[in-house]
Amino acid sequence: MHPYLSQNVFFFLMVTVLIFIHEPSSSSADEYSDCAADFECGNIRVGYPFWGSDRPEHCGHPKLELNCTTGDVTVITISSDTYRVLDVNENDHTLTAVRTDYWDNVCPQTETDLRNITLDTSIVNYTTQGYQSLTLFYTCTSQLALPSSNQFNCSSGSGSESTTNYFLAGELTLPRNAPYALLLTRSGTCQASVVLRISETQVETLESQASEENLKTAINDGFELEWDANNTLCDECQSDSSRRCGYSLTSGGFACFSNTQSQVDRQILP
Ligand SMILES: *[C@@H]1O[C@H](CO)[C@@H](O)[C@H](O)[C@H]1NC(C)=O
Ligand SMILES: *[C@@H]1O[C@H](CO)[C@@H](O)[C@H](O)[C@H]1NC(C)=O
Ligand SMILES: *[C@@H]1O[C@H](CO)[C@@H](O)[C@H](O)[C@H]1NC(C)=O
Ligand SMILES: *[C@@H]1O[C@H](CO)[C@@H](O)[C@H](O)[C@H]1NC(C)=O
Ligand SMILES: *[C@@H]1O[C@H](CO)[C@@H](O)[C@H](O)[C@H]1NC(C)=O
Image (cartoon, rainbow, N blue to C red; front, side):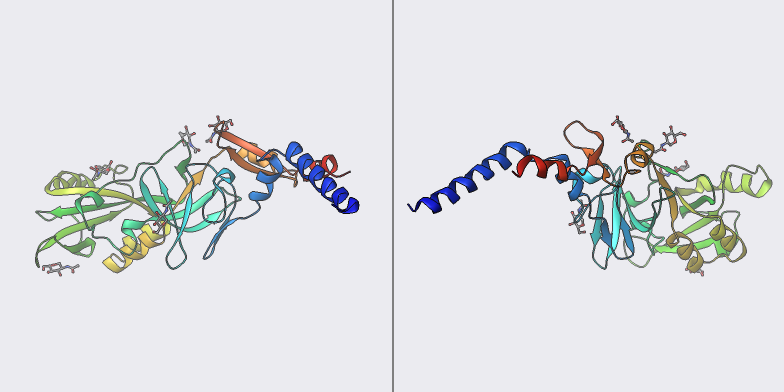
């Protein structure tokens, strides 16, 4: 072998060995640069505590995986309830969402759609301001004490038969006045009720102009969830721009990744 060439080969091998020794397979710097990519889908663009698509799992909380589906629709599944994500506000730590089974639809396709969501309060909560309940009463066998404009029909599973259903916007439990009391006793004649959440603005619209059309609009407008995935720790971490929030998949907890690339470079390069 040519002495000059072998010297080059030796040098190359030495550098390779040094890189191999000095750089762990998954350094904090790698994790830092991995997490540069936001999750992006349609109008949604968000970083920690979310992950999914091009944003690796260790860049967000395990329970907050986003999925970009057909038509650039962002969906998230939290404790087995799937939501369409309409908007994300990183400063307020809130997202606006709609149950996917109720998107543009007030008639559940199957019996199992007739259910309330269960929030995983270790990670999300309803925001306390600006939203109220919307109760949907399904398969009522007698008239409820509600205007006929609060009624909507759904075709039942088989054939052309349809069911009679009602909606009531606003909190059911608060006023103990006559119409509500009557409604509550009579609602026993409905097979099931489902409680959704809509904005106070939409409650007002439904109170003044009840219709199936406005009901769908109110639901499609979504409701807010606030998240807490170590928000305070993350704010502290990212107060330094050479650090990024993430999650340790090995130890299972919040992680703050540093951009230590420059130090690593100095260790390796002669
Ligand atoms: C994301 O959505 C696609 C298409 O709907 C589905 O096949 C996939 O399982 C989903 N992934 C997750 C993690 O929900
Ligand atoms: C949903 O929640 C309401 C109020 O808590 C309850 O009355 C109703 O039975 C629940 N519906 C289902 C399908 O579990
Ligand atoms: C949700 O609210 C409950 C009760 O106030 C609280 O214990 C929990 O920590 C909250 N969760 C989040 C994610 O903020
Ligand atoms: C529901 O069906 C009944 C009987 O078929 C009909 O009289 C009523 O107008 C329908 N209501 C709506 C909101 O479509
Ligand atoms: C916040 O971080 C601590 C420590 O890493 C962890 O034990 C806890 O589960 C985290 N909370 C959430 C909501 O992820």
